[in-house]
Length: 298
Length: 287
Image 1 (tube, each protein chain N blue to C red):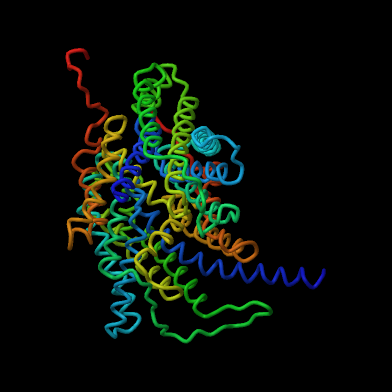
Image 2: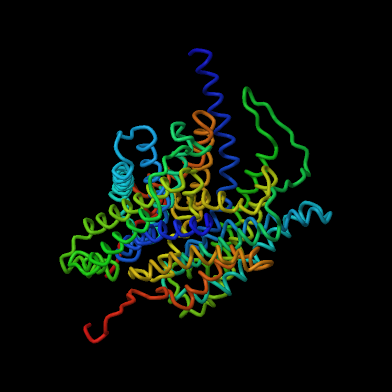
């Protein structure tokens, strides 16, 4: 093999690893989409905005001299609370009137928070100050930073936590029951409204965590939710919307594909990659990689 | 005068756009979130014709050709995205069209010939307000007649219930593809008019936000109502501009008022202001 080819392979590996780190972020945000969709069949377009609000609140918490773990907690709680309020005020009244009005309402909510964020927080990008020293490990020709490893580990931990929650706790079992059949779950004595609120809280809290990590690696701005939110959503659909491992898988796929294309071909096509994969998946298997096909009944 | 003239132009272009989306979304019930992509495809295609390949003909004839180019380019896009995607339903179709609209925008950004992210300049000023309203009028007439025709009723029956429509002998795929392609093509005509009145195009004119705004115009007016679409387009183009003059807090917060109104509308009247009804000056007793 020629020297160039070996370097090309090293490059690929480097982009692959960067992709896994970025994909972890997408996966974390995609989990929220997937849980909400799984439970009430709503594409929550405002999910990216929950992320933005979480990151903003975390930023202001840091500015108020709180330590980083406390700021992350503030970010998760604030986005979770906003999600509960939005669900109670906006989504619950509209739930009965069909999917398209609900979708439009979600888009409206998303736009509202984008402009609200610009007016309240200001449109300028804000940077979260580093709180751990970034170390870069060299493995052969590739570089891995400890921040990337931390993000990956946090995502892994979140996934295990969700697995435990949905399989071994009462509230998790109730969530699965509601997503399987809402009226039947209600008849079995599950308070579905509470479970739906809890799902929104959980999803948005994860989005807040994702927003903090995102803000740590890039910057925090009112429109950040739009871009990250759509990509996470694409990840959720690619993996199979409504399925928790699917969201993680989709997130990694999108992250890796984006970094490979941006690194090896053209970085301005980065945003098109995810949509291209999305359309491909929708054509081949609309229910997603891990999804089951559902027949429509008359 | 220039400012009001500009708004009037935009109103006319948005009437055409809203009518075209109404064909897809209101008549046929297919939820499309990538309409700005078709609009942009038509705008850029017609501008490429008029800047690089224009025949030495008088401007009005060239403008007609440019509109035709815009129509054909956007209709081909509609066909390409429609054939595979119209198998999808509801929110999946919405996501696929959203993705498509973004792909169109990013492709334009990466095409050096049309200026890429700097925008497309030096487009000839062939169209004026008469062109804009002439086209809007023709399209409105077309929609009225389509709605009353047998084929139009078949399309509307798809919106009401796909399975029932198929049982009554409506060819689902062909009808959906027709409304999708023609709707996209008409958006392309609006794009051609936009290009030749503004004389400048920029990819950010055609992002997701504009797809949503056109959609809101359709929904405000009522899905399936031609007069409703026209009124929706007029209200939603003029009101945000008028709020600029309201001063102080209102002017600052006008872009947040807009989504709040949308949410309230969805809660109170999900079928839009007019539903599927038309404003009519004829007596009701006929129907």
